[in-house]
Length: 295
Length: 322
Image (cartoon, rainbow over all chains, first blue to last red):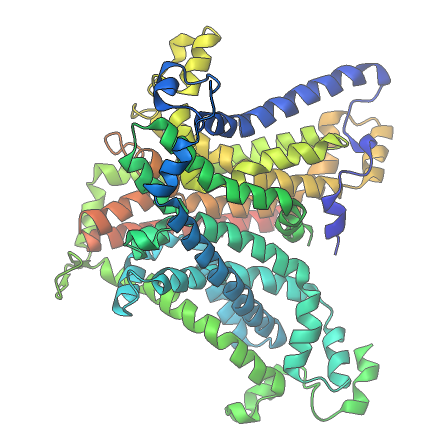
């Protein structure tokens, strides 16, 4: 796969569509960097503003929203953890990610492989039905789904959030993994069979390892979907013990809407784990996101 | 390759699915399926079961529910035929929500597409700095939409929000607004926040695609005297067509799913001016106990989504043939 080439910076600066003729080049480059840095400020500025605010007091922020903290005030974080229950929210989010992401990866890979293994009218129809699930918004099915979850007795339990999240992750997961399995040459499968491998071994030891870029891609997407999920926990996890950070912070903001410093600390706590994960695993995020773009 | 390898191991495995007619004649018993078909059935079962129970059946049920009047609690649902749909016609909030949904899907997708492509072209070949810019641009994308909504709620705050303060500082205080409080502009203010948060992914995909643009073709065009605009239109764009399709599909799906941002920032207000079909559905079904009416709204959302999808696929087919 061409994935590794994506992670590095572009190989050659001369690829740029800069106008011909040397003299104008300097001005063009300066202009380009002004644009790029301006955009960077627009994307990162708001968060820096919030992070700084989280170390100030609300009275301070009221006087001057853009000031710097006079002394570092960590009380807002203590407040978020103790009265805002952010420890529990973060724990719940980790739990949902730990269950939903691996299960989506496994079930979507299996189903996608099956769809490429047997190409009949039935599997063709199944794939069309699954495409329907990729396109239709969650809000189109949430009303009856709510009553399905209720009738199964899952409402207000961890499973009530995990199982629907899993089911909703499958259409996109199958779609993505199928595309990857289709890029693998069928000869590899045949060769493994000739060597006497069972169908299960062919999948587990030959085809699945070859589909790693696809699995990585899906892992990144599903991690973000699950971490950021808001409406599913709001609907199915109606108890505050079940809230993940993304919906927990809503309730926190509702209760403390005048205490701006406390909200800033809560926002920071919600952001930091994802941002740290992202900064450390950036290569995989970017490779995973773009793997689909190159086929 | 496989043709030469297959004959020695003739009997067990290589019953290729290509022989469709043959497989149809076989008796329909799982025990006589090939090992591959049996594995496929076992592999598909859990995913299909979950998909059926939690996605496909609810999709059909929402049509059925939309023909009823139901408060969500009463064991009896009253069949009312198409009355819920008739009510939609006269519902002013419904018309607003359809208009807003189309604004999100149309304007939102176009704006994200144009801005991310522009930014990717700007960053293309920025050398070492590129990796840093990519890291920063992508950051909003990894954050929960709820958090983005809260942060932009601060930016738009009428008195101490960053936007009004900045406008004041540069002497444009005439443009100051209560951004989320005025029905005419609130929906665009929320959409701007959504576009801001969704540029990162498109930017990364476009950047990856630009790195694959053939340098020889570009140089050849330059030698032939094509100017920057011509090179972009006739050399770069055709090579980006796959990325454009991918980004557009992702953005369309993303914008049809929009809910969190509106819910966090305005809950559909002021005066229901920022309702999307999705938020109005939620409000009817789960806040106002109008489950049947909410279901009718969700069916409208499904239909609009499918129409847009079909039109998009058709357009793509036509342009890729040319």
